[in-house]
Image 1 (cartoon, rainbow over the protein chains, first blue to last red):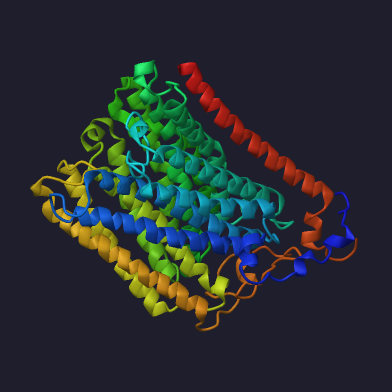
Image 2 (image 1 turned 60 degrees about the vertical axis):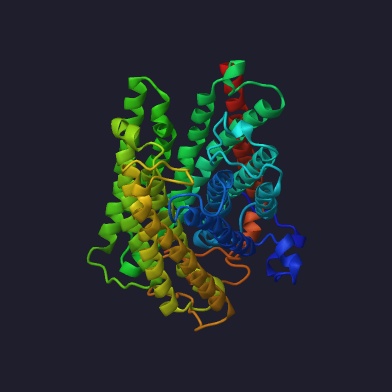
Length: 529
Length: 46
């Protein structure tokens, strides 16, 4: 091994404390500060995107048009999805990655700290630009988050701003992904092999590769949309010899791996929480890694299951149906491994564990309805119905969001140095768990009965279930205000957390004091446990 | 160097820095090629 070349002026860098005031947050290159920024941004966007969903549910509370006109309703469905996917859940998991990956692998910081700062600070500008479209003439984008042409090409002034903000959000994600891969590959503790890395680090490594592979595909697709709209090309315009279905292929070649970009870090968080509160090592650690990699690989060869109804050859339908069903195998490996981890463990049910167990049940419901949608002849019936809405919300809300909230409760004492209010945490959990099911479970029924998605009005036969769903949505939304209060209260004070916080949890992050010092692992950890 | 080498210092060393930059550039090149490649796909289809 070559001798390290160290210049004298490097020697003291790690002993700097944080800057003061706004400069700390604007110019920070510290992974913990940037992680905090991402998490705060995600929490803010949770409420912005959540408010839009409440506009949708208020309108759907009963049949007929109540509060908003149909065009604004469509803008709300589109913006809700874009904000929640690109502005909330992805930044939330990048926040977790920033905070935890360096501490989990024994690194002093991310490998490219300035790039890290840049990755974050692109986000607020992109988010603001996207939201600003709502105030433009003609309003925001209203063609759904999939931006299918030709409908999306009829969007007014909002289209170029939406596309530019998607480009910026994509650049931010790609830079973040590059940083994560480079950090994990080059800055692990000297005696930590790849297979010894915690599952959260593994799931993020694989997620980062997915991001680099597919975010440019989305960027390419929307660039072609832009040139179709403003520069006279006909990539997707049938009148000029283009093919609108090509956009659907491109979009879903990005879109399906995107689903796993969202859920794999959630799997990682669950894989950290369950062993801690089962007081057992994670069952089948290596098989979890291979299952994650398998899911990532399969995610590239299933995209057309989102578009069975466009009219594809039978062989194509069969291929995409079978490959989609195959994903159930590695996913089941994970679910069974989590269950086996709990089997005969000394279980306790603190708030993070409650969210993890709820994730296990409710994400699995979303997985099973996904299997139903994978079956071609059945999908012809379910396509574009509320059943699809129920399916992906079960995956994304009690799936990804519950994992993120559980992760926040799990690591909050490490971040703040204070224990959160366990009683309020449990109340927050039970309210969330009850209201999330009240919101989304009835949507299966109305979907199977034929209610289409993305409509502001519906036949009276769907009224009762829609009313229940809307009550659940408002309950769920207000429950998250309690979460914000618990976080605020924990940041302000509370019982002091020990370094380990929990009962002998696995991982290097628990070897540093709580709150984690501004700089950690100046020297490489000797034991990686 | 003797004793426990500072992690940060070791990682700021020239060989490691070069490896970090090289990995980052390769990944960025992959991203750009996917972007260009998919637009090329659109052009070829048109």
